[in-house]
Image (cartoon, rainbow, N blue to C red; front, side):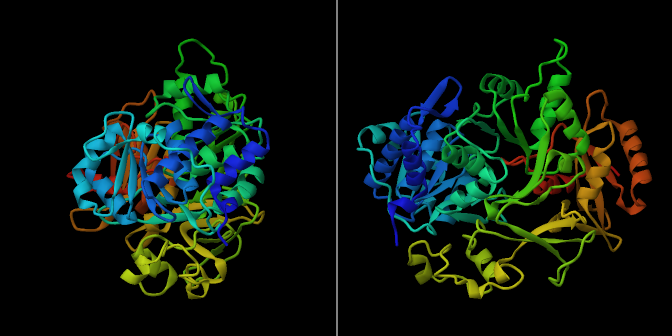
Length: 556
């Protein structure tokens, strides 16, 4: 039965009030701070404004804003009103905005002034988009001013009554919008389960913590550890400046002194590099106040973890998570991480490895990871992925007319799920792992990253570990691309380390090194030096962009 107590945003605000957290700082960005009481005021006003515009339960509202206090309040306000928040971050290309808003069927959008022109260029193609609210600047004709709308509307005191299984948010994985859009819906109950499983069960987050999560609110990591989990614990949460430089991050960390940090390995690497090049001598350890530093989104070389511990003063925890689970499902100790492991399943989750026939494999055998746990999504938003994952027909127009047709279990019963996806509650990832005798899992890359050379499978992760171990390599990525005869060969993209110059001599050195470390068919046919690797909001390498670059004319 729908109740306001099931509403995620309503629960977070009410729990904070009942715990006496009202006057405590909840969110901080630069010199601006919001207490839990101030956050409640902003959230209830945002919900009231959306309700006044006719936004109802289950309707999608897109957020096109940089991470900020306003963005956090808008997101929670959407959920408080019973609608589905679709955080899209700082998309600026009109084609991307049109693709995402059309795909999710957004009825409203809250957009930053910097993105108004791009949205305005495609709004005529979005027939379902009824209302646009502009933040931080002048609204275009036909749009509402967000702050004026909030000021003119009474706060909504009661959260919308919902089922705990109702969708609260819809998250998109970074993808090429021309070829693959996959929406991942999560319910009002999901973050509450994830908080108990991961935030409390692994990290032990409490009211005395100060949390800095560098993942954006358009990702599950940013939503969880960057917003919902600190609020659920009564902790403080820090947002850094828009598109922060390393100097911005260093200044924010020194001022805020976070006790819990999550960032991509590439950011830890940059912080180490900057600290080591500091001309003022030995810097004070930047993260010495931090009791839990988490690296997510991609693999982290053990030697980088050692440098983070030595230079920044913090041991690193490494895990594995995915959008479909809303959280980390594997997590280990800093000692596990130094051995290259992603750890063991977190509380409430089971994990196993299977072969190509779906049969479980034993220790020391590489297999595909399957997981089972309380925070897994019920289904994808996309009809095409719905059919693939659940083994039944794509939804009809009549299905679409029903409220929240995609995600609800009553529409798509568990009995229809095929064994290879959700049979017996097991969800098959696209990631390859090895489990040792002690139960630790080791990541060996994604299935869709693998490619064949001469009939033999190659794992980019294996090549990247070998290449990344060389002192001249700061970071690297490997993809498979075709040669002049149409045959697939490895191509490596390398960011040189400080003190090493990109050029033919370094390329020869790295190739010779790889020949001594790997089988001959595995070393790269081409090696290209780049200033940086393309990354998404979670810090993951965007391999589809490297694949596109690999098809450009090149030297042998």
